[in-house]
Length: 266
Ligand code: ADP
Image (cartoon, rainbow, N blue to C red; front, side, top):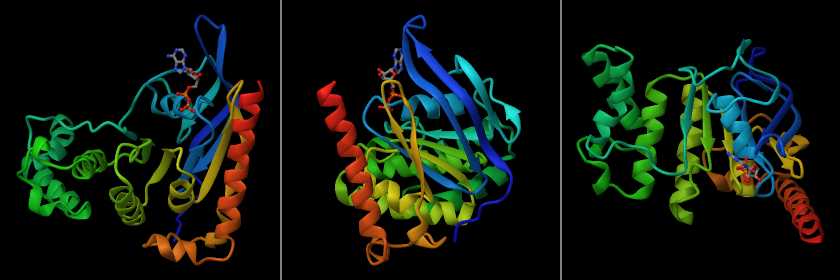
């Protein structure tokens, strides 16, 4: 079940982001509200500003104009309320899986016993208990990404920001990871924003999809996944069986095609 509260995890208004000394507008007049507990996917054609928006929310970059808040506080830099998961695995190669997960907690001053217990718990959640003492180099791509996810979760951020998190994985590992992530989100009740170019992944993981368009980057439509009736599915095939799934996939493909045709004509 989705678990939205009334509290706003993210509130953005009139966001403009320019690069190249103001000569290039990556985002123009973007506004959005994301409720606590909501899972939102950003999709749209390449270059429409999805990653830029995620980076603004992370605080890694600042908007040129507009107001941007997490839980009512203006975003001025990265903070422990937001955890970022990138496509490239970001584990420390010299630490075991468990020590990688403990690392952030150590920096935060969490006592040893507590962080060991938490690391063990998250290793279990991402199905890596047997690999606690393995180093990243000996793990597969999917396993390395599980370590990165567990490490981020162990620091207990309220918002998880994911940028093409499974983009480097092969198809089978990718869907295993999507299902694992849905299980994690259900247990941890996090607010999640995920950038993806994979329509099926966006529909499966998200409660709502924000579709971006480009030139300049802006929001075209915010699309709630009403066909799910507030459910998140443990297995992807449960989603395929739902009335309304095929229509949603078709709608998003058609929107994407429209963008591609417009870009080719420009
Ligand atoms: P998406 O994630 O939708 O593919 P991005 O947010 O990565 O798009 O990029 C949006 C646009 O902004 C692209 O045209 C990209 O080239 C441009 N852009 C992103 N970061 C920078 C930067 N640091 N300097 C100049 N242009 C940038």
